[in-house]
Image (tube, rainbow, N blue to C red; front, side, top):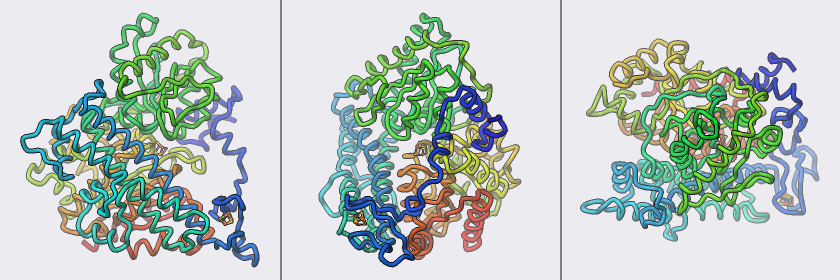
Length: 635
Ligand code: SF4
Ligand code: MSK
């Protein structure tokens, strides 16, 4: 295949270059495996294959009497609904378990058992404590941190009937009542997930609407877990502030020990940052010019936001970082690490290091990461990477010389600080006033992954450019932010090239007052997947400031290349909050018109938020803009 043909697989030129190299070397990647899977099973694609009990699999043909139900009598709508919400259970468990690890680490830090961690952002600790009702007056940080951590852990398993603390503390009264009346407010994260698995066991719930509402409860548990994860991570490692860095494969350095952190949980990746700084001399002693740490996926987003570590790739191109021949070690924690990376490692000298007892890959090196020995473990891992540098074969190194500038680090607090430079009394008014004046039309938040069913990065970049042209203010998280970063949309270059006149004026005004050395970007990087809680904070406070409920706000969300169970759980809580959410890949629910209708129409009537399924990026941009405009007119 030629580079031009590979461009049909990705719009990222660095990825295309590496795909060409992989093709020439006959090394298979996820693109090849996707092709090998075609045609994919229609029953699975439309959600009407049930494997919930071992009488199955039952495959439903709705139009054929006798085959229109599973062996137990389950109809297509029951099967589609059950399959759909089980994705939410998976997503919520991943996000919230990540949050639980952070909460335990904060607790153990406060108790003195995790000596390598500390409370970095005391101000955020106080804010969080006040938000959730933990006393702060006259108490020292350690005492407060302990109570905050305990409250967070209680949200996983408390046995009263009150909604989870982090949910209740972060939504307005209108949503509180809505969730109460629809009975979707989780009282404990673990319970909501376990209950959903119970609800979808054979012979429990056959009512698709009831099943979906059970799914929404788990989705709000997902929101709860990620909200507390973001808050407590900021307490431990600092709340992100604007930072200048770079993205794409060109961030790899042929003269340094290249180490990639991949996954989600910053408890490890943050320690690797500290360890790498301490071990620079060892890398030099090994003949390198130092250590070059790069990020992949959301753990990459975490260290980009706080430490300015450059991003090498997002989910879709993770294998291609190894394909450069310059990566000495890939350190993985949890979630979104394709096992296929090990096959690539086998073709090069790259060492794959697993660190979590729930996330292992056969043939890789496992160094169990423990919070009580965090720095020691991180150093052990970085030393392995340094040793690996000597095994690199320089003749096989081929780093695409492509990278873009990134201005990242826009936590909610950082955005507010930016707005406060113009209006210190009411910072959020800077954004809402610009909407009221028609200078910008509204806000779109990009989130989610890459998916082999789409051209890598294409939909995310296309929709962002289209909306920017139409003066929509853009924020992003996750691998969508990775796509935008690699395309230069998280930089000033993006503003010049793609912002409409109103958006450009707005950003330039912010820039004049910002006091930052760098210019401001077109799209504002708000962090990792769990940091979608920062986005929710943004829309909540915009609505509060405008004195309207969230479902009236000209604010939309888009996951143009959604892939993981987590993206489904995020999208589901986003719609319960009253935000229209575009998904660019059709999830498996076309097997039931009823379920499809619930997610797109009934959801709108009940919550004000709903899914927009659209696989064509241009049309998706039009639909998103139409929703923003409609809400704008009503204001
Ligand atoms: Fe078939 Fe019912 Fe079992 Fe599903 S739960 S596999 S539809 S028998
Ligand atoms: S890493 S969930 S592929 S955004 Fe958060 Fe990226 Fe999606 Fe994983």
